[in-house]
Image 1 (cartoon, rainbow over the protein chains, first blue to last red):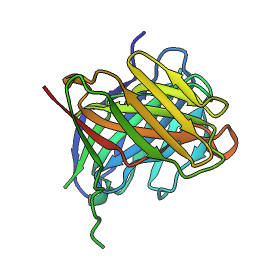
Image 2: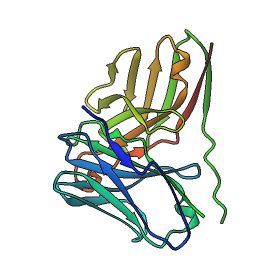
Image 3: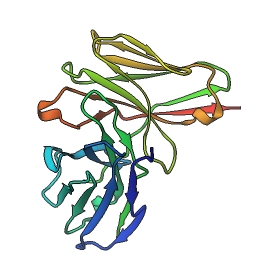
Image 4: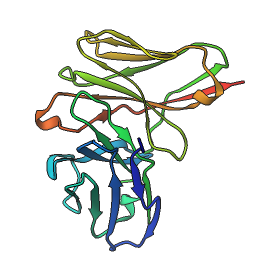
Length: 112
Length: 115
């Protein structure tokens, strides 16, 4: 099976802009979670989607949002970008709870 | 204020040695644990998992030990190879409810294997 794919892999944006990142889960996986990874804060949970519904959300401002489509593909959006949003954004998919999450390669976002 | 980078613990071993990476988790209600390996420029890679009704689980060259009494997890890698050099993370989660799909990660440990 193909693994989790994320596009784009690298992105450079300017403060105030918005960005949309895409994630395609492993075939058959219906749960998609998003994480932000920074040197200062490590890996932090953003949100999780299952069957097009957001089931859980981490402690991030409302500028961070996401959605999931009927084919389980997911997107996350960050509006009004700040310098501190520079990070590696990781998507992970899993079958159901009690099964491991498998991560994609991430999208490296740089905000200038 | 200015953010301070995480100072990751490091473990340096010789090729062929056994490695033990430790992790203290925070939530006594956590009941599912996963170890990940992350190489530079890549996403975390699943290594092995364990549920709270077990205290030991073995995979290929890896063993995970869980001590719920002291909330401690360890990953043992046998016959460590240079290709094992990476950052290793433990992650914890609880079943359902407000924890759907949420993994809480440890800070990570940098493993360096010298040939």
